[in-house]
Image 1 (tube, rainbow, N blue to C red):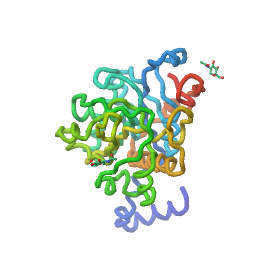
Image 2 (cartoon, rainbow, N blue to C red):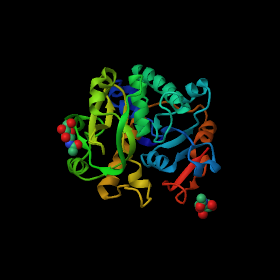
Image 3 (cartoon, rainbow, N blue to C red):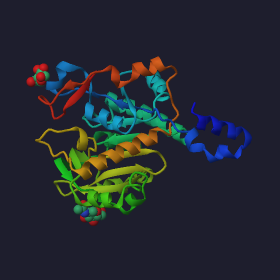
Image 4 (cartoon, helix red, strand yellow):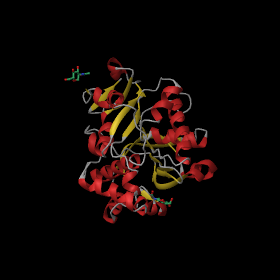
Length: 316
Ligand SMILES: *[C@@H]1O[C@H](CO)[C@@H](O)[C@H](O)[C@H]1NC(C)=O
Ligand SMILES: *[C@@H]1O[C@H](CO)[C@@H](O)[C@H](O)[C@H]1NC(C)=O
């Protein structure tokens, strides 16, 4: 323990009031572990390497915010996930393709989602972030039905059309004004989707509308206005239909991955924001050995740029 911490601890014995004066430091977990659910391999080119995967861009994204990553397989028992939930500090639902109601991914996402609702209600903070397919999965979990429709924006970088609420949101309120302006004007968000939630569908669905605030929208190829960024009103849950991780960690020149200064800044600030939500979670592993075995560092990513749009992929 450092001298200043010792002094602070000593001071607390004398002045009880400093317990209320120092809650942030005492309740912050600076060694967070964010879980990432694996996706089932469907791509023929990937099949030789494993049954499930996580593109390394998502891992680097979370690591860049100051967290460690635990890959979570999607074919285990409910008891296993209930146990893991008590050990990790947040969950990232990544992009990919699976059935949003019947897949293993959907089943596991639902288990964590329900545990997170209960925990957050009890003051035990547990953040969830959904990117692209992950955001779609969150919408199905909240609405209880699949409300997606065709909103194709495939390989398109777009500016965000912010709502008024975005400027007051937890996600964006601390962004510098000049960056907000750049995000609203420059094509800084990579879109790689065929389906999404239209603004109309969202607003007409009471469950979605009560649960999430729309922070940004965009226009698809077919003219549909779709929801592109959401934040839960009463939970630390976030969703983006676009891909913040590509701005720094994907480089396929056939793809419109934004790499400008502003694009990198946007990706950096969102990763740091989400990991900081994870620092509010005090869940932890029982033993350092158990933690060490769970982490992504036990795995080596495969070079994948010659058979996919990813630079590297973790296979499990
Ligand atoms: C931005 O959103 C507003 C409100 O939904 C809409 O009227 C406008 O057409 C949108 N513009 C773009 C470029 O998405
Ligand atoms: C991709 O590159 C790796 C490393 O150079 C090589 O081992 C692998 O066979 C290549 N795969 C394909 C499909 O070309």
